[in-house]
Amino acid sequence: MHLQLTFLERALHRLRLLPLPVMDAFASVLFGRALAIAVRAGLFEVLRDHALLSSEIAGAIGLHPEGVSLLVKSFVEGGYLKRIGSTYALTRQGRKWLLIDSPQSMVKLIGYFEMLYGRWGSLEDTLRAGEPASPYYQNFDEHDWEMYVFGMRDLARFLVPELKRKVTLPRRAAHLLDVGGSHGLYAIDCCQRSSLLTATVVDFEEPLRWTRQFIREAGLEGRVNTMAGNFLTLDLPEKQDIILLFNVIHGLREEQNRELIGRLLGTLASGGRMYVLDQMIASAGQSQLARLIPLMVGLNLLNEIGGKAYEVDDIRRWCGAAQRVRRLKLRIPGLTLVEVVK
Image (cartoon, rainbow, N blue to C red; front, side):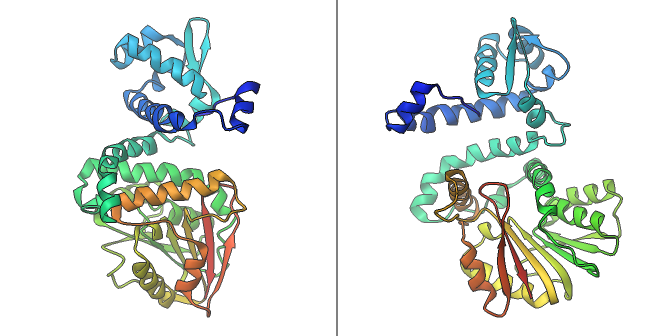
């Protein structure tokens, strides 16, 4: 949601006279819930080709006209719709992020966020106990896994263009291991960049059912393979030239990360590279957005699986002094990429 403050509002904000908790605890939370419902109902899809009256939108998606009138007016203020006379149409932002076939679509990711809303009801219990009653995946059914995999794939499609600039593929690299790779999009992209490379995506069997579909669609059967099971206990393939550990460490306890990274370094060939991508706690010099996002991700992961947000120095400790560890600067706030060279 993009809000343009007036001169007076900006002045009040600087003077700390705007009651921001009202926005944080009421308007932002309700707007997010309304957006998720609208996406699921297809509100933005019916505006794909032409503008419609609010009543016409309501009829097309099966919601009450009075409620839809409030929704579309809210989405105008949020920047996703615009008003043309008495009708409503998509803005560039709405078309880019909220149509299912857009290359930058976040529709599936928003659907996954809607699943999270229900589980946030137990957040207070998690905060008291320090961990959730059970890891989220233990209660997943097939639909939940689908929403998870496709949601994370939406996020990955957004990140891949930035990561291409930073993840170096050595010229003679032949083997890549994608740990907790879910959709496999990062491994697929690396194999599309290098014809010499083969990859193995390791994850639970449930998400890998979809991963194999994406591999077939990319025409990379035989070059991108899958390995089903818990990567914390599996015997992983050795002599890997590249290891991807993307959005994994925030779901594990510190001792699990230390053991996992030690095992991964053992499977990495001399001179090989491991890339760790995560929402890590940012330094004081970074933006508020870059500092806030990892903290919210950490809070969510605590509730989901007993995870937390980590720092780059944690990775350095887990790797030990024998490895070369450096942080690679990304343009995406809240996201950190670390390269480890053995």
